[in-house]
Image 1: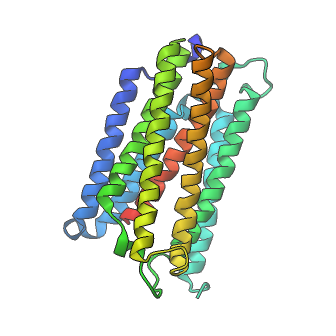
Image 2: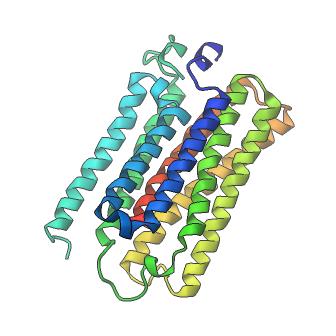
Length: 99
Length: 193
């Protein structure tokens, strides 16, 4: 454990990461209330912020960026399959096959 | 945590931990399917109320922040056990369980409010997909809180978790962070967009 912990952030860094996550969440909520000002950029910005938070939690809190490649591949595999499923269904939805 | 941690394992990763990551991979598909199903019906016209008519963004934002901060207390518990700090491990575990319980209480309150306003599981198919999606997430949070309390109880009874139980803490931490990342997606997809 001693050897491994050297790669991980310190408690202070974890708190800093959590503050960043909190700020990103505040920006998300602010974007929701300023949709009329931000316009068409609102949804893409919200998606970018969500992806950023997702990456931070997975990478630093779940320590995936410090993990074995095999573990990364399993996680990426699940993500890719879910995204492929999502893409197929959304293409079908757009073509009106559901209604 | 890193690949050089388990040279005796053929994969280089502790087998139980690899199993945990495989499980989380299947959970991604599970929630991916539920989110996709929800999005099929989002934005379409149905009879009855819609989520946008009843939700309370400030309330849900605070809930989201609480769950996000529970990931911080969880990772601090993990860090404490790696440093053999038994007392802080127990404190952070209990804090994580408490924050999770507050999030759950908020979700129960939110669901109750929605029901009173007329947005129920059977209002329309959009309502059904919303409750199934967020309900399953809530069930995962509930399981996480129970696991955290059990682990905290073991720690208190034994005056600190052993190294082997520390591995259990790592599994529960992975599960807890996963529940958090699912909510990061749900908060954006369901409430904000």
